[in-house]
Image: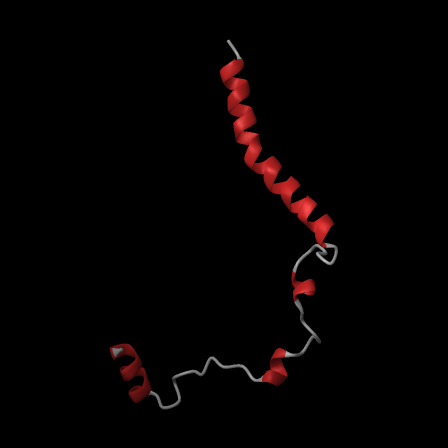
Length: 73
């Protein structure tokens, strides 16, 4: 608070506005959620299968590895 007060009094116009105008934000066209992710989720069944496979394998790997280590004698 003190630094903000001091900077605004020492140099007029030193405080910056962090707002962006709509014109400079929309420089590359329409931006949607489909453009932000590297996969398609239009087919919900296929997407659900891929998610379950990905997380299922990732979460089961430590269990499988620990069961293998415990089974070794």
